[in-house]
Image 1 (cartoon, rainbow, N blue to C red):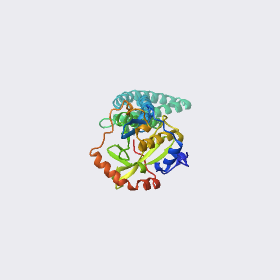
Image 2: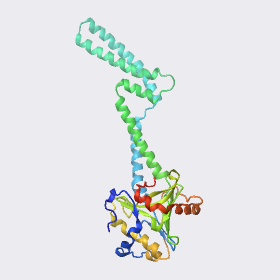
Image 3: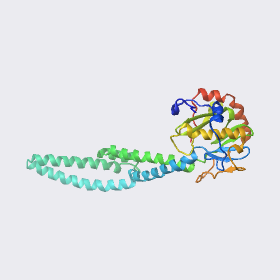
Image 4: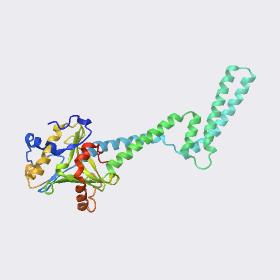
Length: 333
């Protein structure tokens, strides 16, 4: 059952209803005690599925967070202790001035003896010590507390600016990664599930306080290596009040490299439930899977939900036309 000609390069979503007849004819849905993931719950009226973030958080984002924390710690030596650097600079200035004075005496002796080789050597050492003293004097002559720019100026005079900047950038890079994955793993709430409401014939969810919904016959789908994306009409202040968005990456028991056949049974289950009820999907009275663990927060249901849901449904009259002709962005993490 080929639903896309271009695979992962498909630009536009297409109506799920386009393949209903093929699903009815080619895919047999067998009622089970456990209807398989990503289905999370089933009752008389509603079937819910989770988003792809539920699994990827623990299997992808959490290991990356641990790795980035470790690498940030390793690179933290690149951040100078500026007070300690200033104390070190003060002591080094006195030490280097003594060394320079001694080399200057030896330089004078070499000149008196007309020893060209020693003159060249000691002249080089005097210049080296002078440059080092100049680099440390940056701290001594600085009014107030030293800053990172004081440190960089000193490193520049010592000829170490490139390596120092590279180390600082490495630390900033890994720190940024750490903050991003900390936000994804710890701060980001657990995504709301996607609700297939058989009684009302609609599909809905919410994300970050925005309600998304569509009539079942109008929802769009697009499949790629990351899984299934479902297209709904969402509240959107920047697009005249409403605009489609994709709930992306819904996986079928794998994290990546999905093929169309991996998602066919899930889509057939959704169609069977909406047309024939829970008996087409489960053997029991109801089904409830344990929710994903280790989330500190849930994406809470928005206030005035039912009223806003009706408004979104009213605005979804042109949903199919919008996602068939426009590249629709997925919902942000």
